[in-house]
Length: 266
Image 1: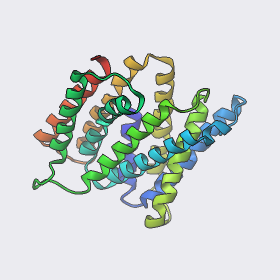
Image 2: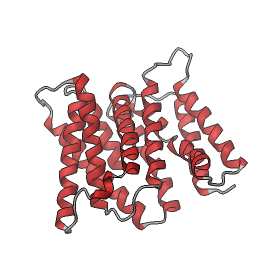
Image 3: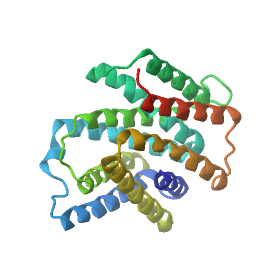
Image 4: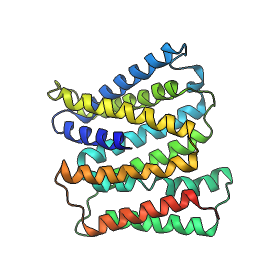
């Protein structure tokens, strides 16, 4: 989670001088190359046929949406509020899983979902003086990631960490291609910033994939919320942001509801 937060900070800084689509394309191709080499070293096909199934295509479409709109939110809105909204992803996944897969979700978990959404509204504050429509970019990105997580449930088994990494960064590259139709290309004046995003993005992705596949999901998943802590620290130290009391309170409620949602039954 620290790796992803630092990646976001590098991306936000680089987006001030390099088109965002170009950044995503560069990072996606570089990350894809790293994981493809790891797969080849282990005697695996970097992109086996199982990644071409209908389910994986749906998952990729949701991930492109998530990465594209979240990256736009990172570049155009405060890092603190964007990261807070992202933490609401489980609040979408849990009730959606009840509808789509028939999972049992009791009144307590539905209540947590509702409270979490109110906290998201408290951060966005639609209709208020501090509201900016750009905040909705983070909401769309969060919905894209929720759809990706739901599609992952039905994804083919047997893909290695390296193969998942190759496919994941390939999707990031595709998101960059889509965005580049609008943002164009220009000479990279800050290669160090993009290299930093690549290094920490690859490290974060590799660490998270390993943790989710070797540890108990119920134990590992709540640690996703530590990303918000790192993001808030970076937003203050690196970008001079000063999250107000409503944003901090909403962030705390989202994290509390999310952890309770993931660790409680009924």
